[in-house]
Length: 497
Image (cartoon, rainbow, N blue to C red):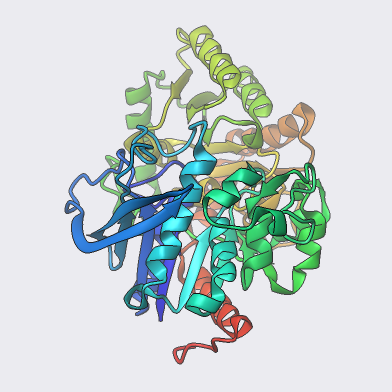
């Protein structure tokens, strides 16, 4: 089956967060089991090729109508691990993807609307037409809408639409719909694209949900939450309306990247059979961050975007509480919102001389690997979490999560004390309320086990390391979802399924 995955991100060349890891991991696994996979991205000026080959011209030049213009748009190609990557590279004074970063521009809606329009031009070519098109998040929410509007001209292309963060829905002015060739007056209705909170604006995610053949989010628990609680961010009735084609598939992690036995970015490789070698990575982490050697202090890690979704108030409190409780703190994270960035810059300054804390404000891939390998515990107090890769990676590296019981965190972490699962399946600590008291209770339980019952704590580490967090099961579920999308579209199931 020819699967085209369209996204704003794909690791390692274009990664701003978990979406990049998702696309890379799923694409690799689908390619491994024999599917033909093509990932389609914007040709950002910040693409990272490192040891990879440089993109090559494919001899394809799209003419993309946009706002009364026809913008020439060459398509470049790049071979990744078992699959092909296609880069949409417009030649335009707009400089859509020449901004020095992936997101965060005032005209992000316009940039990704253009990308969606160019993508539709690309897949409309007979030689580029996929068996199924897999769109991701609001940046590609217009793609199902554009394909549905052009169905009589190009026929049906089955579409699966994955939602990674419902907090960002793609709210745009009606004029942008006209710029990509859509009839805004006809589409800006409650039944189509009109935003529930402001019917004068279009909601791209809402439109994509309506037009796609199959829709999912990235954990079963989060699928329930956004359908039935305020975590639906105003789209709860929409998820209920389209419940027949909506569900949750838990993410995996790419075990070729995240494997402590083979990871080239950590000084000492280790696994369940040689867990004692993790102590060497703990020593290396302390040396790199300037933390004092302290056998009586566990290292609590935070590896996270610093934004409101991730519970920044609880992160800041957890840092202070952990230090007061006799732990060490290693934080790696960055903030886009100026107020949050300033708050953590001030906290970093206050802790600069503390021998038990280091805050690294930014992102460093090699440091992330070392933190996962060297830490004892990791703090994940998210207000909502569609899936979360942090806890999966941490457990793979024998680092025990302390997390809020939401979304994929609840689906993957079984509490050491309060779980019906047998002890050999328990792998972390959960708390329910987004309060400092609830967080402190979970931290106290975790630190108490580390100090008073080290043998049980080691068993908890091992339980996490022995879990299956690979993409094998999720990939099978996505193949079934693609088959559903093909049947729902009227194209019919692939012969491989």
